[in-house]
Length: 510
Ligand SMILES: Cc1cc2nc3c(=O)[nH]c(=O)nc-3n(C[C@H](O)[C@H](O)[C@H](O)COP(=O)(O)OP(=O)(O)OC[C@H]3O[C@@H](n4cnc5c(N)ncnc54)[C@H](O)[C@@H]3O)c2cc1C
Image (cartoon, rainbow, N blue to C red; front, side, top):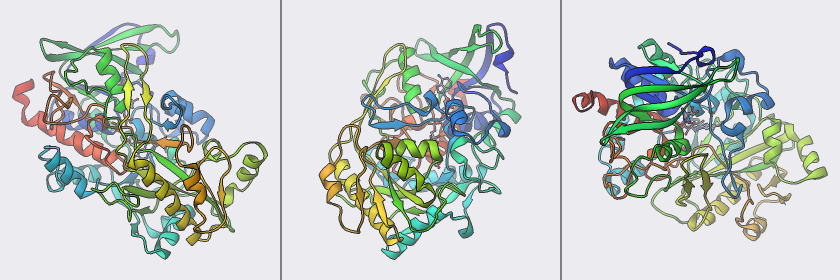
């Protein structure tokens, strides 16, 4: 059932076994699993409940409609643009549908070195399997690999780098290429078309357009949550109060810590909002002699994992290379240069291809959390991450030239071009400075980290707050380190595991 807050002209009070805050990768999964297990669930989402026809394939309409802060949220020094979805279905509604499990050695590290027993690959496998099945993850077909992805494939195969055609959660995709603006044809296996309807079918009440402002507790136990919504016709503000024995916080890695602080929940370890990982990515653009038409088809149809080695911090390790492209507004905001040279580059749009470097970052940022207002995001790439990033830029340029590029444009503010393979001194000369290159982050994580030790971590290995009985976190905030790959299936698998834990230990909570 959907509670259409826009038409309600009164405060609302609801009672349920479980209140889930946020309907993205973590929240939707937790809500469906718990509702299907027979518990009454209220799922509250800050963003709107949109349908296929609302996704109009226009950037100027969809960024403000679907993205947090209209897609302009950035770190305090504007070096990293942090993109998050804001709608029923969360960031999965705008995702590229790439499904990648974390590397086995990383899960081994989490379980053996960080003491998170049960997170090793063998133990997590059933949760990943369940999630992949429910979201329809399957390998895309070779003929669905679009022009831009084919360039990444061609260049990396020529250089002998390991890569593969990945799994995607899309069903009978029409290859329109508008994934980042929401799917008009409902062909994504995102939360909006999978777990949210499943939760609703199992009896959950979905409350869109309602911002939870506080989690409530009493004597160390959670008791519910409160939020605000507005009646659309008059703009009148009303309160939502949900009384619940279990609260699952899944508002994403920036807003979950924000709600934590606003609620004045305990932070004995001084860990709330710390350990922020952004898995920053930069985009290397290439000009090809022939049209590539990179905006058409499935955006991320090939993955190069040759350099995703774990355990070392040396250059040449710890990053993934994936195809990247954007529609004209976003592309223009990311391409280098100003004025005429920028206009000329945009004029070459049909012949451009691009590769994104996704860095497994060791840098830790933090959120400056206040009791009111959005947090400032502090993050400055440092240490070995910088060297590995510069190495990755050169590798992406190498692959582009091997695929036939005439020219490569580096992701700096000023136009920095490379016209022949190996001439990479400009990368070393420019290095990494504040606001240059421009980084993107699609997967903020780690800000309510999981760990056995309550002196260091916010939640325990099952996702339950060390300091508040019945309060669980089930979003990307819980990752103890950067997960190294696009995060959606890991968030979903961990949320499934947390829901399972609640069901298995129901006598403690209900
Ligand atoms: C453009 C884009 C493309 C991506 N593509 C991929 C991809 O191809 N593959 C992949 O693996 N990952 C991808 N990701 C990343 C992936 O979507 C996220 O890592 C994942 O969705 C994070 O899950 P989450 O539950 O932590 O947060 P989210 O999915 O962001 O969900 C959080 C939800 O909480 C809601 N919320 C926030 N505050 C409140 C509040 N106060 N009250 C109520 N609700 C609130 C938000 O509106 C949001 O709906 C992409 C992300 C973006 C932005």
